[in-house]
Image 1 (cartoon, rainbow, N blue to C red):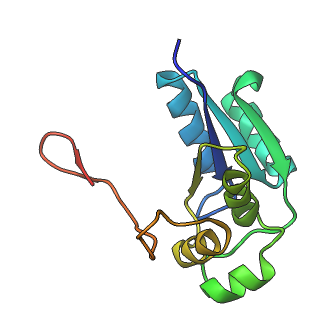
Image 2: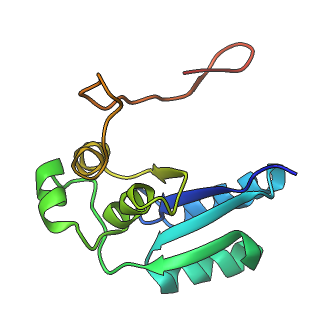
Length: 142
């Protein structure tokens, strides 16, 4: 049996959240039932979307957060005021080893600044890196 992967998600990050986040989880669970999602965000909104998508209860938990970081906020403003945000709490769960990976579709600058504040870098590497997927003729590129 495959190892369960704990995935922390800033469920309030980016446009059309949490709808797009929960839809993505539904698609993910079709391919891998071993993913376990720790969702950080507005519990009431998340439950509404989860019920609509009929996610199995054994594949997620919700951590209610009172704030979210907006796309228009500067990264430093977000980092100063965001300690109770879904993004901060999701990254913090990675730091505390409650999650194996952390995902956010939210404010990229804030994600990098908060990650740098909370997480250590690999020895010899001083800056975080970004990776993105885009399609090619046969599959995807990074």
